[in-house]
Length: 259
Image (cartoon, rainbow, N blue to C red; front, side, top):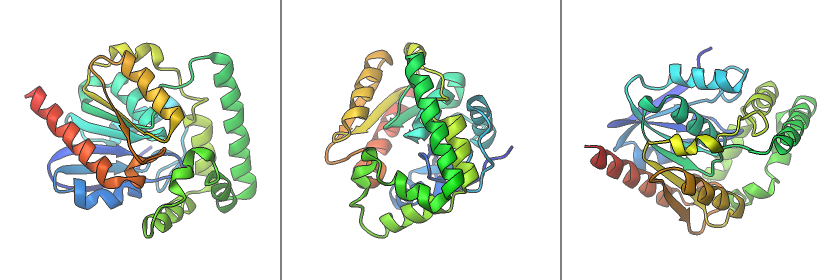
């Protein structure tokens, strides 16, 4: 299956992977800041936007490989997209020149907890199918992790809601079942194998994912950690200028170090 992809900008190829209920257009507000410096490649992940339904964790990685540039590229992911970006970089290390993981996780290490999360994701999938996208999105937006997004200014807030509502219930359910934290294999033990320049980025107000980022930084050789002041779970939206500067600076420095 083929993922829908949006491409804009010039320069070094940079793939951006969005979060749950998003789409490639989640990064449109960064066109002016990142577009002049990078050729941005933003796919709709499986189960989202114009892409087909998700069918499996491994399938998603294969679909990303087919959709993303053939030449080695820079890779950044947010939340669900960060989890996929990490797995992609571990599976295809020669394809990724440098990596930014925003509010990401290597998965759930404890099997019982992972099974519990899988059951929760299945319940959410059933809810999406029963109640439809609008009702599901209304519930999802009340999640405590996303509290930092409730004060987004227009037009960002309106664009975020419209993007969520354009997803289908079947697509969202497939993503929960196949790309959720319960479906993701734990990657904690593989983190020491990651030899790609890596920036771990989390909002300072997001205690849970700041803690996960610290734990990942301890295991990834040479990883850099940035806890973004004034931000919760979604720095690329909440403090977009800070995010763009951090990502561009890290990738530019990483390219210089490689040279």
